[in-house]
Structures are given as structure tokens and as C-alpha cells.
Length: 314
Image (cartoon, rainbow, N blue to C red; front, side, top):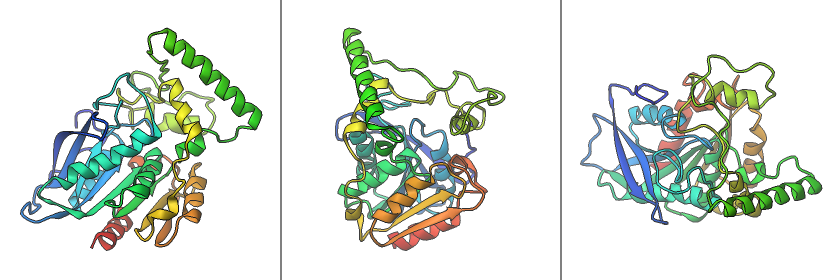
């Protein structure tokens, strides 16, 4: 199992790969295929993006292993500046770069002789749901989009702040930028989760902080390369750009929004669903909180996802 949170099926092969994005940053990925797959024929493929701040060894490996068993070629990846991917300084986030990472995955898959270039979809978990949608807005090679427990990080950056609070946030970020510059452009990064997994979630944490700890801080989902958060000044571009300004332009390519009925993030999917054009579907999973769609195979609706992909990519 190594440092993956989910065991690999005996019928699935996982190959570590590296490939560049458009900015020349090398991305570290894993390619999943069924051992019985016919490599002489072009296959349907899916790119799976990790939750915001996560890595390929967490939620993506759960989706990839299951979808590979169901006949898809699946690519997972660490976002640039994260995990095993390239980019310095570490833990930098960007709406443009994180969106580009999906299109770079399309590039890589489309160069494989056993992948059908006309049958490539993207699936984004949590924050990657917003990046997957943003990529599809401009990249017409993406034939279908699935989001699970979606977050729109450009909305989240401003969420709940009054104009006065937002101004104070900007002033604090500006002050931090001065500090980063004075430190030779080594930006501040404050990990959110412990270096080693906890046995239990600390008492007294408010939601949704407690929920994040129920996955990232304990053995369930802890990973040494995903300790939460990004450099402090990574918030700046998310305050300045809106990821889903052109959501309507994905149509007529289909979108499936999957969300838990108890997810604190449910409104992100509902609002994006309302703005998207047909064909689209909002699929609500019973008795599921936000993080349940990261790794719980008894909650993730794989039958629904498989049916959607096969119908969309046929």
C-alpha cells in the first residue's frame, strides 16, 4: 500500500509518470489501467484531480483504482508546486496554473497510443472540481466533466467577508508580500495539519475545521506531502479572478455534479449547477458529508459515474 490511502486492486496496474504542463513545470502522476485492457485499441480516459491541498495518493487513488477496474484509463497527478510535482517555492497555488494542470493531463493522455483523444473526461474532487470546470470552459478537448464535493476556490476566498473585512484581508496579504520580498521571495507557509497522523481529532474544533481533521489529520487520509493550506500570499490571485466566469460555455458537453446531502459545501455545486447549461445533472448522495466523497467507496456513486462517463464518451 505504501503511502497511498487505498489498496490497489490485483487487477489494476499503476505506473508512475512525469510530464510537463504548458509552463514547463514537470507534473508527477500515476497512470492506472486494468491489467486485462487491450492496449491495441484506443480507450476512454479520465483525469482525476485531488482536493485543494491534497495529493494523488489520497482521494484520487480511490477513484482511479475503481474506475480502472471498470475499463477506463485513469490519470491522477500532484498539482504543480505540490507533492512530487515540480515548482519552486513549494506550496504555491494559482487559479491559472491549477486549471492548466488538467489540460496538461489531456496533453499527456492524448499522446498515449491506447487512449482515444476524442474520449477524455475530467473529474475534480473538492477544489479540483472548480479547476476541472475552468479547464473545460476553454479546453474543448475535454468531453465531459464530473465534480464531487466541489469547491470554487475563487468564491471561497471571499466567502462571508464584508467589504470592510475584505479590505483588511487585502491589507494583510499586501503586508505579507512585503515580508516575503524582504525574505528573498521565500513566501510564508504555515501547515494546517500535523506532520504525523493523530489518533483522534482534537476536541473542541468547530466545523468545518473538525471535518478537515477527520480526513487529513488522522490515519484515514493523512499524508506527509499534504499538510494543508498554501503559501499565505497564494490567496491573492483567487481574490482577483473568478474561476467559473464562462461556465455556460462548456455546453453542449455534459457536466455531472455529485454532492453529499450533508455536505457543508453543497451550495457550491448547487450554484454552479444553476448557472451551467444543459446537459447537466446534480446527483445528491444520501447520508454523506463533504469528505465522504474523498474516499468512502460505500458513498461514492461509482455506478452513476461509470454510466455518465460511458454515455458521455461513447
